[in-house]
Image (cartoon, rainbow, N blue to C red; front, side):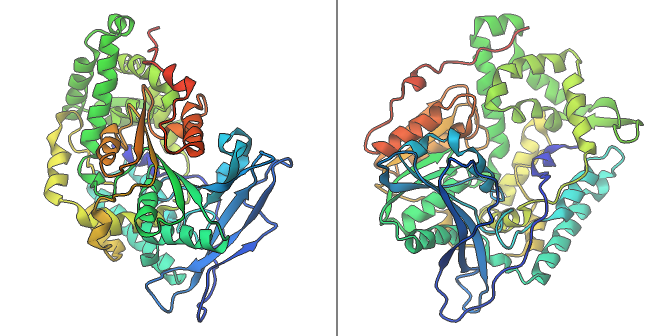
Length: 494
């Protein structure tokens, strides 16, 4: 029983799928709307509206779609004229909930801040949801599920979702990074912005790279938080990156006298434990909260390593403690996580967008030989595929492969700040380091002891402060006082 698909479960509400019709000589436009996606605090000045663009710019008969946009006004009486445009990661994640928290965003102290939803995501129109996929995740995670039916279950869910979306008139070939980049460029032109800055995280750093390559003229500076290089084949090395990241954390525990004293030789013991559980799965019994019936799960290394992957930056200090609990057969945390598998499936928010992007831009460039090798290469997590989607799923989704240039490195002299978390297994530090040579006016900050997307760490806003300092002076490496105060994590030992 694997629980790796849990990251795709979303519990958002359904939204409308109606959208515009084909227009001759269509020009992108922005229309203000009084009805917003979220309630905004009264003291915050903003404009909300929808950017209308073509669904597929490669198709002369394309329909139009609508993308929600917030334009938040700076708190400054004399704001700088170059706004920041922000869109989140994914692909398939929504940017709009960020609108509720503008009082926490340092960027508004100096300039306007624009939130852009990526096409196909939850508040966009249309929204490419896949409840069929969420249902498949739910069924496959139940203790009585026959693993022999695993592939067929997900293949059918992808087929059903694709057919449903296409019946709505949605052109799945219109949902990719190039189209999103063009949406942002259209927005800049429609709003008559002369110069702007980009703030991107994780997947959306690919959008930034495409914008810098194809539409560089108005870009003043770029922050890439947890960057994903265009030239990297994510699926070929995700398992390797996972093991390297947890090795770094546990090695830090070994060099910390207090941590090593509490958990001696923890790294080797944990890896041996994962190997043993992969060969002889751990039996865990819990009560089904819905039926009060006792259910039995059998967990392998690929399941138990979530003690690291599920940890946020804030919970990093607890990782050695939680691993030690596992090694001592204290399964309380494991049981708490397993209870979540009985929650009702969500609607697969943005999952269709994620499939379209991945199957057009990542899967076609994969080496299946490398994928198969990585799946069986590491005895600690043997059987864990590094691929986000199996090759057969992308064959069913059948979107067009993007051009070869979309898998090639981008070079630019636009000022860039790369931000990495030291323990980030999703977009590891080495990727940002590899990009610095291609961006000749770039700087790189590594946040020690942190994980993915440091600028969204609400318990410590140092990365956000650093990003804002960079936007104010993009030709110098930001030296925020808070950054120098960040040291190794204080690992929990009792």
